[in-house]
Amino acid sequence: MPSAWLFAAAFVGYLLGSLPFGYLVARAHGVDIFKAGSGNPGATNVKRVLGAKAGNTVFALDVVKGALAAAWPLLPFLAAPDARMMGLVGVIAAVLGHSFSIFTRFKGGKGVATAAGGLVVLIPVSCAIGALVWVVTFFLTRYVSLGSILAAVAVPAASWLRGNPLPLNIVATVLGLFVIIRHRENIRRLLNGTESRFAKKPPAQP
Image (cartoon, rainbow, N blue to C red; front, side, top):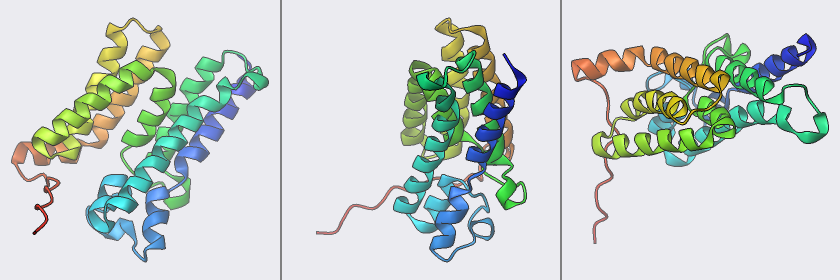
């Protein structure tokens, strides 16, 4: 594959990933998300600080930027050589951009939503399995972090078991490990029993 195509995939992916939607949405509400809650600009912290609407908006936007980074090389009219490999480069670059954004002095989130958005384009069934693991874990434990960590294990495991092409399996594994490493403080708190849960809303009063 010509190096110019790989550079384009990496460059566009990194710029898309760097878009700091968590920071921007919080800023629109008059909040510096780096100084609120856990200080993380991801959707979970935005949701804790500003509520479900803002948090869900950030989550959706982070998923979309990962999906775009993986999908644009696959557009037929571009006739990109080895478009699937370009998509892999794009999603890796997008996750790095999200976690080390050029627009926020190389600070960023943990990459879960952005990685999910990219991988759902490339390995949708494996991502669906990971999403199911996340949902079950969250509703059983109310730990967002634990759900994300287990989903980061489930997606590459499902990809390998389904016999996807080796490059896809390797990238899924690398991204899963990256997400887990970015959750190292959460893992420490989970082991210490100090990790925050999402509390269930009390039932409405009649």
